[in-house]
Image (tube, rainbow, N blue to C red; front, top):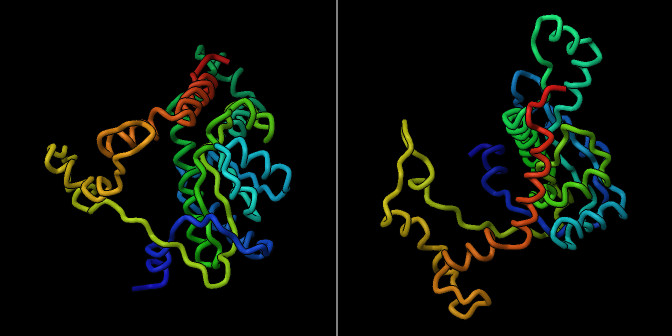
Length: 259
């Protein structure tokens, strides 16, 4: 097995970090690797905010569902879906007038543009993750950065058509520490040949049989099985409701309105 594959297969989410600062050389390599990620039409519809300030990390650790480990990471990388720069480029070069003279509208980015920019940002983030891992630097994805849109917009000075889609914590592994890997679903339930394979009820139960073993009968939701427990823990959670509210608010900017 080559070193790259080994790095990918051994990687897990790191939430405990050595106190050392990440060296400028290592951080530069991580960012360069992120920026070499595949991107739709070579547009690079994303931006990356590097956060080292202790006060900002403290605020984000609270706003991202009160997770104290976030503030202990030497570096946070916030990955933004970003069409703002392209639209400034269009406007700076008289694209609005050009379209009007053609008898057409000049329209803002749409929901599909947000999805495309999100793809760009997430692919760049994963490049950063693998590059970091190869340098002995662990990471953890923080999806909660999508919550509290108004707060993060102000905290990070985000203009219109910019939305934080994920965040990475970065830090060197503590000496001798390794991350225990979590089980994944079996390949037969995830990888399909040529077309989608809708699983039968029996196969769904087989897919989740290892997860079902995690169920504890005495639980705060009074759930009767792991499916009921998980639905209440995730889908009906306060953070999930807040994320839904926040994403809907952000989507209002990406509606393709005439501008």
